[in-house]
Image 1 (cartoon, rainbow, N blue to C red):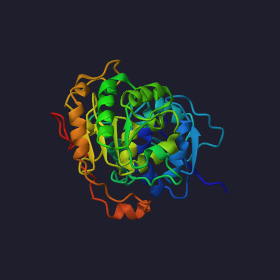
Image 2: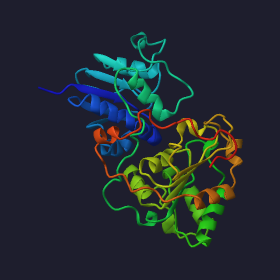
Image 3: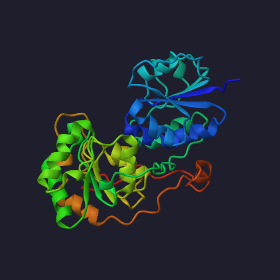
Image 4: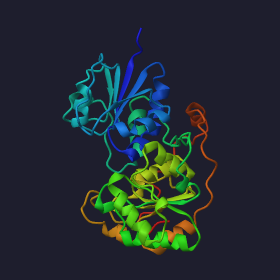
Length: 346
């Protein structure tokens, strides 16, 4: 007899996947007899499976219909958004039960919890499950480093990730060059990561900072090699991107530059001293075509000072079973909204 299926929708990016790990662990704990299937972009599938929270993935694009040719799932879970499009995608699968935020345009979700705008992304999905009767712990954010060798250039290096999905979250190239140059002058190793569309950016920074071409990892790492690179680095400097979430999940010291989006919504847990957030306290459009003014208020000296102030991290997370991890976690999770709200926060 086939197992019942729990189908989860999270067809978003790397940071979104990692922010959902505590919710995915809660579902794994609550539905141990179900086959757990996660719909997400195909390049992220290896990392999703590595978390141990799902047994199978289905390729999916944001708000596109799912190609599902199997019997209706027993349960669907909307970890993608609040609807109505994502609700409709899951409704088309004809599940017996759906966990989702309430949406006026999706009557089947009427009993779901309300969506809140000012809520940390990790806490948001845990609350949705909690209020739906599934206990969830937002502190369960860690993942183990993927097995296998890391890119040599990343081992023990300061890893810079200068790119971001939108210009609003991209710190100026000249400032990345200045940081890389200062680190090189101090005798520190530097590696630069990025996607295929960021190779030119990474090469420009390396060339202008006097780095060897081997320092450029941009365009050369899939999601698992990127995770290995972050895990092997001594520390990470990046914007509000998926790499910041990798540093959090892998317990690597990090300096994260926030622009239009406050760290209280997407930043690392504020009680972990090995992460530093820099934010000028100004909100704006995260999809704008120009760097956000608040991001531009963060200077090179701010970044170098935060790097110098980073403490040593705790030992790497070794994959303690999450049932055991939950037992020792704080009852109410971390104070996700506790980041400083004005000035360049460190």
